[in-house]
Length: 314
Image 1 (cartoon, rainbow, N blue to C red):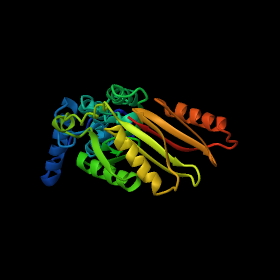
Image 2 (cartoon, rainbow, N blue to C red; image 1 turned 30 degrees about the horizontal axis):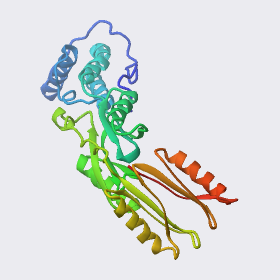
Image 3 (cartoon, rainbow, N blue to C red; image 1 turned 135 degrees about the vertical axis):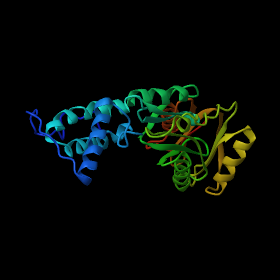
Image 4 (cartoon, rainbow, N blue to C red; image 1 turned 180 degrees about the vertical axis):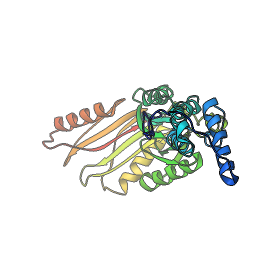
């Protein structure tokens, strides 16, 4: 982000003017000088002009350069005073425009939040985490953006996501969805916003889609074949029987002696194994489920237990 104020850059080396000389106005030179006088009056009086209308924070440097060029085209006697007013004029043109800081937050179970046009990164982070935290207690900022539109696409099961940017919300959503589908399979973009200083208030103020409320039931299951290390699992099912059936079906395609190890609702599940020694565990925290599964595998007799499965179903 460019600074909105530049101190002394591009200032003319001319000293303060001495005695003023008279001008001779002839033909095109007269018209040129008249145009310069009007521009100078606009700078001095703060009147809107072609170079200043519609300025945005990120266009401050262009405004300043254009103003300096206009001043430089005039007589040396007035150049210094003209250029002195350029900085304040361009800053005033931009001071009431929104600043383009935005952020996206994501948490367990697909909790999400987005912010746009905040005064700084800290405010953008906070504004994104707040709505996300209504649905999860581990929300973190996963992306920051500026002077663009951004979208979040979430994979089926709400464990994985991808973020992309674009010149419009639809373009960002399409890019995020494509990236997510390429890596994670079935995905949907349900969160997007634009953080643009030069956008109209009406286009900025449309609220992004809120995150889906947490489901009352979200069954998951793990099936495992210790003889050949075939595994199958399921998540996000509305009924226990559906979770069991899918886990066993997937496992049967990979192993010859599948056993349904565990079924759980709105928790994380983990399975660790060392040859035929198996340990599994569930918890609301993925790390705790992992540690418990490894400990159970060791208790079962495993000497080199390794984590084979870990996921959450919220």
